[in-house]
Length: 289
Image 1 (tube, rainbow, N blue to C red):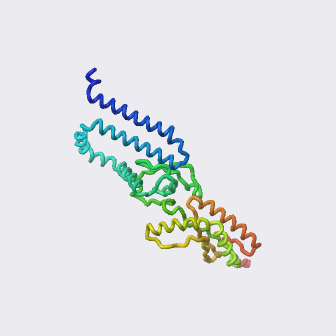
Image 2 (cartoon, rainbow, N blue to C red):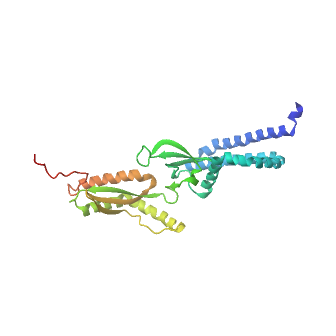
């Protein structure tokens, strides 16, 4: 029994257990008493992630130091088993490669609003194998959370397009369509929409100009207007006015609601000069009996 306790293998195992326990006890203590006091959510998240990576790093270093004389034998065994492991864990390996691509390729970061694997939402966490997203949309109209947390494999960054709504240009172009009856004052209606668009969305337009200029310097893009604009189209039912404007990606729904509220109020103030249109049916007359 004493030979077992004093054998090199037993001493190494005990060293590993004690070393790992000490490393992670220190990491958890730092996270609980120091990092948890950080007020900013983004800094808090990054600090917790960084401290965990430090823990994994020192754990690997500990194993390497303790078993340094066995690394040669382990490399031969790992080489033989490598082919079978790679085949059996294809999805895991691709997900790990996707994690590296996300970290170093700048696909997205925690807090970004993305669409990945057909799921749209805000990135909560980026793990080694999965990305955690707070989903928006689905049965909830508009860009609002529905409360469902989705775990998506990182391998999807190689399989499908990654839509990022907030990375380099956190703005979206949006538009609302307003149908009005034939015979209304079209010029007045167009001016009302333009005035409302400038009043409500002009601030977003000014904020977006700096971001767009940065994109122009970084990528091959042409200058484009970000100011609100109104276009007119006609069909066999009504005259359609379209207000196009730019808005911050997470304020699209509230901005649309504010625009529609103002348009309703201003159109009603014209006392019939401008009338909203709806689908109607016209009868030519009554057939004789």
